[in-house]
Image (cartoon, rainbow, N blue to C red):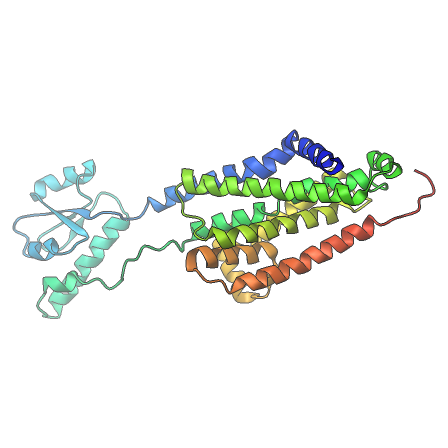
Length: 351
């Protein structure tokens, strides 16, 4: 019963804290929504359909353009071309001499220009133009999810999976007498400190894990992004990452000569910096670091978790999972050793 009471008080102190609820529950959902909106806007700038192209009936190359999949031929007279370009009903008009008319620059106009230049060069070489040459597909189109947006979502999940640290910072403040007055009174009371530690660790791991699952559910059900394909392996990884975050919070929270707000900001900046190195802000940074300093991605816990999530759920490769557990186990052991060293039995002159 005493353990359950400790668990209850820990839950109340977390749930009714605005800062804790924001960082663990609201922040991942808000940031993932921003990622989705930004990348959706970027992705819609590409060419998803054929280019509306105006061509006269007398154009000697009209038959060739009819066989090119990216070109949607719209027969029209030259006199009507300018008005059609302004209205947007066509994007390019091709003259009989293969010169082109456009109203504005863009990807579609560049594509048609390159096709026209290729036809001109073929004519200049005296090579017969075969429609089949322009129907060839030199690049196979496959439905793959390995894009930069997925890396950002995995990096975000890796970052928030250690946010159990924000709650576990408060555990030493309740039982370490050289940190707070509450801890002074708790130290004088006949209670078992290990029970307080255990209740706090258990709650914050479970609470943050639930918020991670909420984030995954939001991304998959609301944003319609297939983020996780192997839950059986991903969930144990998330649990272990939450244990890492809790151990890190205990380590920071046990530092005696540091204000509470300073400890929180240290956790915030450390998580953001490690996430920055893992590619959450820019995938090109992660690529450059992996090329220049490959060891960094193996010891950066967030970068390692990002790579592990990507390999398991996109590539269906599990080679990084053992390294993940080894590195995280080392960090957890280090942080817990520091935390318990700071919280060891100490004789004080006065409390």
